[in-house]
Image (cartoon, helix red, strand yellow):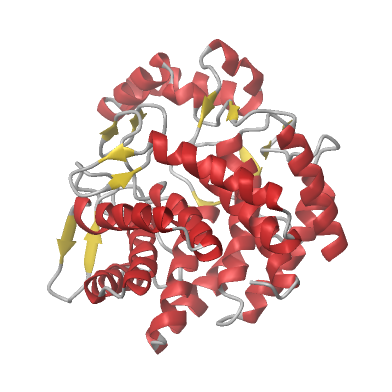
Length: 397
């Protein structure tokens, strides 16, 4: 397994070196002027807007290369941060200064494109994003993007002890703790917004805030951060469905693979720190649901358990990246999850890595493979997960 992983990573990095950090994206159709209007109309009148939304969905699912008519390549903070983390992982494995240099270069770029907030800094997506509950302008800081930047800067600080990284981590922590809208409940739990100006309560977003504040609290010895973290994690746990699943939110009741992974890996981090039995029980219940409903009998991963609208997805490679990472986070609490991660790692490399070095994006219901290398989804996540797995297998983490 280690030799296969090493070869896969080297092949991917070689491909990445021959390209740039800009790419097309899975959201290209929906972030175009036509896509934005279609989503707005759909939110207002689903019946009338369905034909236009359906056309874009068909283009995205079955004619993905037509996206050049709608969008240009962009650079994504979430991809840069995960590539930085991957390079730092690989530096720990190889001790080759080249990878440390590449990571610090990416971090320097991330700092330059960060968005200042009232209390700190954060990162978002380089496109306008229309959702059911809010519209986020381009580069609006989001709680689902910023944590990956935090993790990359944290790894860099732990490796180098560079105080400039610590100062950036402090600014990120202030954003996460004080710029998100926090909603406290009588049961001593708390939710939070997705961005700085909405009132949403999205479970994976709340879990991300909890996980980031836990790391920030430990780093800065800040009990207030840790208290906020626990309230967020407890909120997510208390809204777990009886079957072990989580909806995306109460307003958007779909259940998919990688959002489930997001929730579980953040609860796993909380359990490793707090050691509470109810956290472990939530993890076990969640993992049993995951194993039963997202892992097919042939070992491949299913994307949706419950979807709101047709998406035509059979295999989503983002799911593999996050399932591998989830298993790594759960290796102590649920060793079986780590065993699954190792199996998925082999399957990912054997079935979905192209000879060029990168990976397929997805497979649709007609078994058509999308081989456009979107860096934000899933190329950066895959490299981060594979290097994290190699670290675990090498006993260096």
